[in-house]
Amino acid sequence: MTTSKQEDFDSYVSSETARKYKKSASDALSKVDRHMLDKQLAAVQRDGYVIIPNVLSTEQLHEIRQEVSPLLDSTGRNDFEGALTQRLYSVIAKTFVCNPLVEHPLILALLDSLFQPGYLLSQLQVINILPGESQQAIHTDDAFYALPRPRQALGAATVWAIDDFTTENGGTVVIPGSHQWGEGGPSDEQLSRQIHCEMPAGSVVFFLGTLWHGGGANRSSSSRLAITAQYCEGYCRTQENFSLSIPLKRVAQCSEDIKRMLGYSIYGPFMGMVDGKHPKRLLEGLA
Ligand SMILES: O=C(O)CCC(=O)C(=O)O
Image (cartoon, rainbow, N blue to C red; front, side):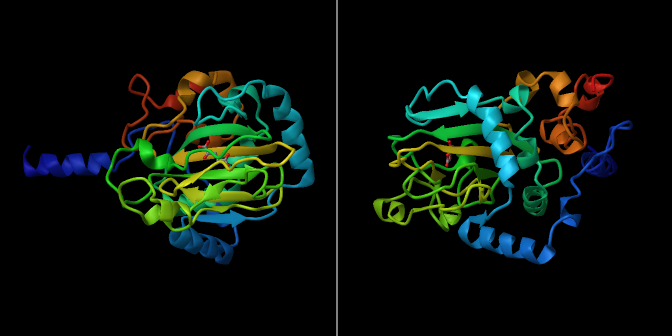
């Protein structure tokens, strides 16, 4: 390649090739309190996570519970999913009730600050931990990306408390600061540093994909309902294959932010294309 061809290629990589649908980005940063956001980001950098209390209203919590409870009809198929844990996948194909959580401005503002424009929704799950469930294996969500640690996170997750989260009922377990650890699983001493996220219903814990965490044991007599949304950089493979699991007609009814995060977007100059074109063309005439 001659130098000028190389220069052309470099500028092509950072260019926008789609003509009809231009890159879109969330406007969350203009909607949140900058001072609060900076404090949250400082906590995320230091501890790997931050708890944002009391975000959802009682009405929202009621609506979510009403809508998702009838959809939870089976328990986990392996230790990781949990024999006494109900999980719902492909959530947007079944209900839109979790969409406001996925695209909550407080969360998008954190994601906008941490990741490249064009980050994706990697997974959306309803998780209901039933009484008697044991603690899930401590893990990192970024572990799928086989790159040596310590390294920058390639994604982040939220766990929204729909019920109060306590130590007794299985509030998410995190190991503060573990996002900075190197290769290898945690030692006994490191595991002894785990703590439960205790937070009232309507709160959310946001954590980096490099943070060691897991679902807690439920030693109470009630279930613990949560919604979790995971996100990844636009150049990473998503855990759920939303292109195949969410019908186009459902996607067409979602907001621009959700469409973009479901993969109806281009990570420049052409990652995500369909037949050489912008994937949003598939949604034309469907809304
Ligand atoms: O339910 C939780 O609190 C966390 C669950 C989790 O980390 C997972 O299933 O990967």
